[in-house]
Length: 192
Image 1 (tube, rainbow, N blue to C red):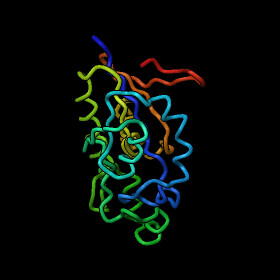
Image 2 (image 1 turned 120 degrees about the horizontal axis):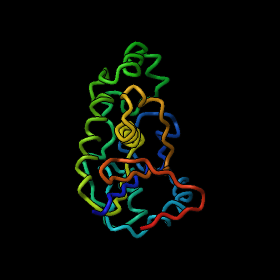
Image 3 (image 1 turned 120 degrees about the vertical axis):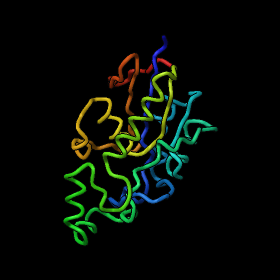
Image 4 (image 1 turned 180 degrees about the vertical axis):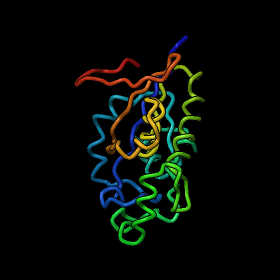
């Protein structure tokens, strides 16, 4: 049986990220597009290209191929009424709500999706890929990649906020009976 190889790529930086704000459906920060060449060349000709529905993921996916398949499971975490706001603004306006959200993975004081709900959504998506052999490239959001890590490593959802995902960073996962995290050394070229 051929293994499933999943490369998760975080979308390129947006102005909201630069300003430490929760995302809206904004476009990419043009300055970051020039930095994408090295990552893009490594994955340019993959046949199975997926992305989240937001503009920033579709724009980033377009760097890797002409016809990315939009997958709703790769959508960013729904942060409800907090979208577009910075964590600093929220700590000033709703300190207890933010602290509850940070401490309790089931909490959703913003009226959107909790971290635990996001982790369950991503777990279901990963389970659906287990019988899909070959190499898939999925362009998505930092929160989705964090949720994938939490699931693959079997960590409690409380560890979610201890993971940082940088724009255009990649995460390699393999499934051959069990999901595994795979790291690569400098200059290592991944087999296609």
